[in-house]
Structures are given as structure tokens and as C-alpha cells.
Amino acid sequence: MIEDNSLFGPVDAAPNAGDVAPPARVGFFTDTSVCIGCKACEVACKEWNGIPEDGINLLGSSYDNTGALGASTWRHVAFIEQTRPRPDDGHEQVRWLMSSDVCKHCTHAACLDVCPTGALFRTEFGTVVVQDDVCNGCGYCIPACPFGVIDQRKGPAGDRNVGLAQKCTLCYDRLLDDATPACATACPTESIQFGELDELRVRAARRLEALQNAGRSEARLYGEDPNDGVGGSGSMFLLLDEPEVYGLPPDPVVTTRDVMAMWRRAALAGGALVAGAVICFLGGQP
Amino acid sequence: MVPEATFTSYYGRPVLKAPSWHPADIAGYLFLGGLAGGSSIVAAGADLTGRPGLARTTRVGALGAVTLSGLALVHDLGRPSRFVNMLRVIKLTSPMSVGSWILTAYAPLAAGAAGSDVLGRWPRTGRLLGLGAAVLAPALVSYTAVLICDTAVPAWHEAYPDMPFVFVGSSAASAAGLGLLTAPAQAEPCRRLAMFGGLLEIGASRRIVHRTSFVAEAYRLGRARTLLRAAEGLTGFGIVGGLLGRRRHWLSRLAGLALLAGGACERFGLFEAGMISATDPKYVVVPQRRADLH
Picture 1 (cartoon, rainbow over the protein chains, first blue to last red):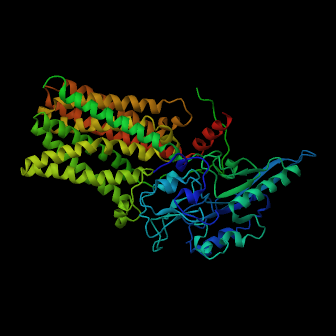
Picture 2 (tube, rainbow over the protein chains, first blue to last red; picture 1 turned 90 degrees about the horizontal axis):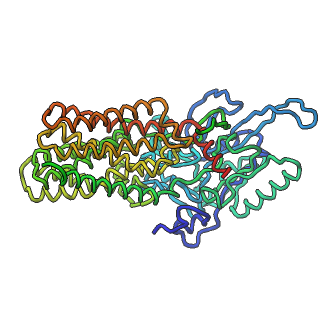
Picture 3 (cartoon, each protein chain N blue to C red; picture 1 turned 90 degrees about the vertical axis):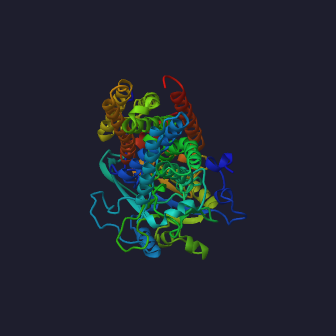
């Protein structure tokens, strides 16, 4: 049955999905203030997960020639160059923002909720994973995701997962072997931290406090709040500007929060149709 | 008036991924599924009120439309050979899962009703199957509204209170159009149904298009605007033509064609507006920023 908190609000993800006595929920804390833009995470992710090449292009967006997360890009390092006056003498200088984006493994994951085949499922670690042998490529998860993470793999021809929805698995195979996900293992600055979500939340709060005490008032956390529109994410971030600067939605809400209200409106409309048709056939001239 | 929006984005790139759905397949399915369901309702009404000619053409029309919609849906899959995986689970949170089950139950009933009518065999069974199809039809024509609204696509999601009314109205108008086109002599109820469905479609569609929200603008841009205007014009002509065509069957048939074309334009227009709102990051960022302020 669908209970109040199944679709919205703070819950523990794996037990809410019916898992009995699961291990602690795990996730990422990506501290963008120490990201150096080396893209080791992108490379490690591709290598470990056997993800095919998906375009070698010059995009004209600083050092970002990856573009965005997608079916064959499960970590994406964003580069933002900002020109702003220095606080002391007003001299214009460039500030670099770099951030490694990843699937949010939402507490309330719309991709999973709308998946008609059950290919997307909640693991015992509280993460969200696509089963490649079940997905039939209907594509419904793609517009459901409020972060634009999951996508359909379009090529290269011959790749065994072409046509299927693909995204970060939080290295489910490595988790089962007590190993750290590939991206976090490869990160040379510990910008990407992996761990139990409760502990990461504490670490993130402490890091935020340290930065703010050092005068970095623009620092903020993203995705750490279990009371946000997706029930908190399994990957949280420390950002140095508004989320949308990094291509993240500022305040996303899981679409399935409203699905029961939608069904009620549809039922009302269906009833109106029946009533209208009956009147049209019974009333008036023969 | 909605004030001019200022917003930031990452190199102007979309925040969301637009649906990978091909418009011909999925907007086409929205139209054909609606036509099928509406036609089953008209067929049942015609059958129960002694209009065998109208019952036959709408039964055949329902079968044709549901067959084509099934093909379009399978064609759109990344792995068409796995279409049967749709029936692995039943999930209320997935309108596509619910819809797959509705279609699976509906299609054999529509096929049986049409088959029995055309072959002239087992009339009682055929009638029962046709009534069964009509019972499922309201679910078939309205669930597709939930299907597109239960996404992060801003223009679709915010329109969820009105979308099912556009869809049922449009389905009724399209089915009435099929009746006027194929059986104008027995299509008197279709003239009224065209008016009921067409006005419901136009009214609910206007509520969506002219909503005072930042996102509703997507319905008033580019091809979405063109298609939705064409839909309104064609449906409006169909309503009037149906009412004036009682003694002029050529006019009835023309009105029927206009209603069908109007229904198709409506679905493609709504689809297009969703695509516009998913592709431009401002439709994601600005409303979420506004919600912040409240």
C-alpha cells in the first residue's frame, strides 16, 4: 500500500522500500571547495563501469568538454569561470568553480517510482539502480528525474546497453564487496567522499561551518536536507554559489508527490466523460 | 502579468533531460488511444440505442486505433522485443504501468467487439465485449494525461489538474468525429458529443494555455502555439459543422475530419509545449526560485 511518507517527506529509503534490516544507507558528499577539476572521477567511473565513449567534442565551456550527466556519463565535472572584483582593492579577477556532479540517489526517486517494468529498484544500501536485463527502454524515467540525470543510451552501435536507461549505480558491485565507489577512490583531493549518509551529513555540516568561519559566506550545502522536495539525496554537495550556476535545479520536488492527486483528477474527468456521453445518447432528438 | 525573469544557468544547458519519446509515436499514441477509447463509448451508445451502422464503424475504428497505438508504443521502446516486461509488475505510482494493464485488458475486448460485428457471428458475446471495452474506455482516455503530467517536465506537471479534462474532451470529440465521418445518417448523438467533448477540450486547454504562471508561456510559443491554435479552430469548425450538417452529409463528414484533425493537433501541441519547457532551463530555475521566496 502507498502510505503518507512513501511518496514525500523524510523517510529511511531502504526500509521504506520494504527492506528488512538493511545495512546503513550510504552515499556521497562532494565538497566542491577542494575540487581541482582533474576529472579522475569521470575516468575512473568510465573504466570501472565499462561505459562507452559518448562524444569527443570541444564545447566551448571552459575545461568542460563532457557537457552533462547522461547515459554514458555518470560523473560530470562542471567548470565555471566567474570574473568578479577582489574584495580588498576591487581589481577584477577570475574565480574558478569546479564540481563533480553525480546521480542524487534520491530518498524519493521519481525515476524508480514511474518505472513500469521494475527495472529501477532500491538497493539495500538505499541507492537507486537500473537492472540492464529488465529495462525495456520505455524512457519514462528520463523526464521524471528532476535533476536530468538518467538518459537512454543512444550508442555506439553494438554496445550491449544501447536503447536502455543508464545512470550511476553508486558502484553497486563494489559496495557488495565492501569497496569504495570508483570515483571516490580515484579522487586525489577527497572532494568526493563516500560513506554512511548520517556520518557524511555531520562531516558536511562541519566543513560548511569551517568555511563560513573562514569568511566564505557563499558556501552552502545542497541535497543534505531530508525535508527537501526529494526527501534528501543520497549525494550531497558543498557548493560555492547558487545551485543553478552548476546546472542543478534550485529546489526540485519529486513529481510523484502529486500522483495521487493526479489520479483523482483523471477519475473526475473520466466520470464527466461517461455522464456527458450518456446525456448525448439519451437526450434530444432521435 | 508575470514579470520578466532573471536567472542563471550552466552555459544555457537544460537542467532536465527532455523525453526521448518520438513525437509521432507518443503524441500519436495520445491521440490514437483517446480515439480508440472514445470510439468504444460511442459504439456502446450506438449499440444500446439501435444505431447498428454507427456501432459498426466506431467498433472497427476503435480496433484500428488501438492496434496502431500499440504498434507506436512498442516502436518507441529502446528494446521493442522486451515490451512484455511492461507486465512484470503493477505500480500505481507508474501511470505507464497502470496504462499497460488497461491497454492489455481493453484491446482484446475492442477486438472481439469489432470482430463479432464485422463477421456477424456471436452477436450477444460481441455486444458484451463492446460494453466491456466501453467500461474501460474512460480509464484508457484519461490515464494518458496522468502519464505526461507525472514527470518533472514543468509545463506538463503544473497542468495536471486540467490535463485529464482536455484528454477526455478531445477523445470524445475525436470519436464523435469518426462517427460523423463514417456514419452521418445515424450520427445524431455524435453531433451533441462533438459539442460536449469539443467545448470541454477547448475550455480545459485554454485554462492550461492562459494560466497565470511563468511556465504556461511554453504553450504560447513556436510550434506548440501553432498546433494548439489549429486544434481550437478545427475543433470549433467541427462542432458547428456537426450541428449544421444534419441534412448535409458532406458537411457532417467534413466536420468529422476536422474534429479528428483537431484532436491530433491538440495532442501534438501539448506534447510540443512540454518539450519546450523541458529544454529551456529557465522554466525549471525561475519557478523553483519563486517558490523559495514564498
